[in-house]
Length: 173
Ligand code: SME
Image (cartoon, rainbow, N blue to C red; front, side):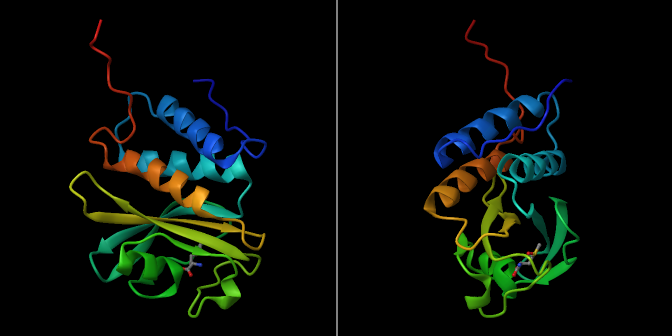
């Protein structure tokens, strides 16, 4: 396999996320495994945008506890309770949260002191159960907007596909 990570910083955000989705699907060919999909997506987001931290916190006790999953970046904290920090709040509400300035978010958990802004997106499986949250941290203030929310929400829907992003054979002839 000759896949290499790509830099999408030169593209408008909507196109950048489309490009990463194409790359993710191509990379995952033949491997239907949610952890492998999470790991590959973490890498693509980290390399593609040059973010400080990109990765997943998995639901290990529904309604109560998240535990770190595949990620790229500096050492992440291991466990976050539902309702705590940005990740736990997004998990409890089941909603995407954009934090333009982490110092203005009460209860923000500072895993890396360089983080200035972040976004957290809920991740669901094919039955609609919350299985994780995707967390991205930036060294820049206000790095994330509604284009990121839309792009990331679309990307993580891959994890709700029965094949977790693996291209399905086209049988139309
Ligand atoms: N800042 C997050 C914690 C996770 S780390 O940033 C990797 C939060 O407040 O939930």
